Length: 273
Image 1 (cartoon, rainbow, N blue to C red):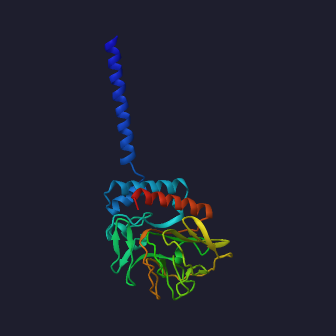
Image 2: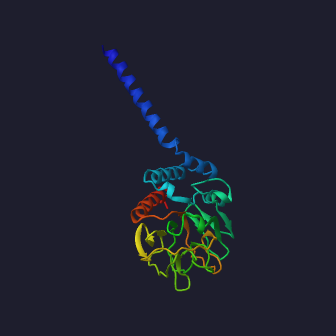
């Protein structure tokens, strides 16, 4: 009887260890199909980076935000090769809105910095191709605290409606999005900044919280130019803030903007940045 009990105990222990091993393999080796496509294209090998990408994709899908975006640039890997990819469509094509870098941006594990007027990334995605003037958003996650007035993302300073995101701006570098024009001397220039247009309004967010709004419907006009990351056209005043993520997509509600920020912040926390 004693031998039988011992054999049963050994069998139970083996079954338990086998179960734990399967759970471990599932957690670290099985990725969402879209996350895996990005991992394969970017060539990132760091396990923390891969886990952070996978978790962000899963959380965006679980919260019904994945389809809201046409382009998501996670800025991982620390090189031009790894940071150019669009998470939503990681093909090496302009038509997939893969970034094309110009100048000599500074690449690091924490993101990409565009320090001079010659430095920017072209998304190949025009403001007229997002979702309409009343259904469009751009966002930029800044890791830099500075008071440099300039453009961190946008189309042009030379043709209305301009469509540019300035995290810190004086009167000559207004932040503009479908008729919503502001100059903001932000006390804090770090975090996730977003401009979003929906049918009744245009809203500026920082870390998912409303900062200001137009108070009326967005203007129905476009520059028909592609959106740049790190600068804008004509008046080249880069904001010189390290980019740890940038997105282009449809307009978000207040609740969606806050949910999106929480997902992005989880992503940054996982990466330790």
